[in-house]
Length: 497
Image (cartoon, rainbow, N blue to C red; front, side, top):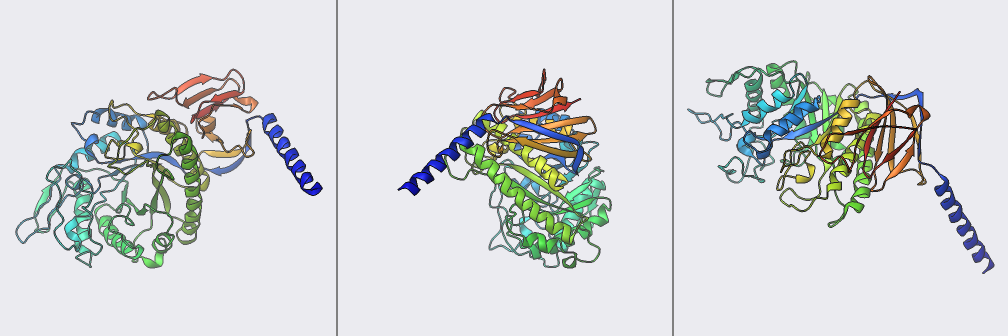
């Protein structure tokens, strides 16, 4: 009994000490501006997915593309995708001996808006959906006559009907020619004139092949080689991005694709991509559970990214990496439900956290997903309010990052001491940018906190997005001393003189 009592006494004393330690601790950031940890290669950006709400005639079309233009981001990714076959596929029927069925009347509209809004910036174009007739299926794959009606079962088949892949590669070569060469000659020798001469800096080959058609790494690599070989003939200056998987828990995709021995001679391994979405662990979670779930899953993903980078560096060290879908999905696309206002700030804070960690890892592009979603079309990933056309907090967090950070920035030694044992609630990073010294602060929890900054921050400006800024641009305040207060899920950039 005496021994047990002694253990209890020691434990109690330990808890008291820890509690006292935590209470006496001050949330503070310390910076050594003279010690560079790494040079960032990371560009913050976003993806735009084709859907009825982004098209001309939509009530938010003009506001959406004004927001995209105002963002001024490099490497915007544009993806026409399979739920809308008529807006994503240029040849919905196979050619016959005397007729072809090429039709760009619905594809051109959003593509033109994308290229206009991103003029002067490199883009990543991904016409991701292959015509269903190119795959072996038990019956003809039907699609809605209404182009705005979804067809979630359009991607059928796991085996191409033409194993030589001439049919597949020819389709994409003509598609790229339509947009870069002013037109193309079809399967019957007839020229189709487009008058498009876009400069497309990057072209991504297919989207989430591990989901769409359940394509194996081996088959995907053959498809990539066949497509890129033909597309390089059309546009030699365009760089190509491969893999684009949804899941990162299968290293075989990266081990196989990144191994030059598995590609045809002369096929370039210029870039790879993959995605991450945090999701609730169980149905019915509230914002107070989301705050932990989302960041836990984000950190688990970052560990996978570090592992994938080790594979890339070993097999293809000159290949760049784009993580071009980063976001949160609360429920399936066809489900709808209330989304609390705090959610948009939380999701924005999670993206900012992933961005700065990817900069430490050395990733080239961090793309937030996506510009426009709405009920039945992943409303929880939207960066625009689909009812009034205003950008939400997710957009404004991205704008804050685009305006302040980019490739060439110096990440310097930064430490955070928090009231918690490890200060898990705050992400902080001091960065020397082309515009000067900045400190990025991210409050990951639903609780206001005050932070003591280095003395040189006194008098500096703070630009921030939080619950008070809502659908407005980042707010600004001046520090009277070297302390800053972060509201729940705040993302702030402190200018240091």
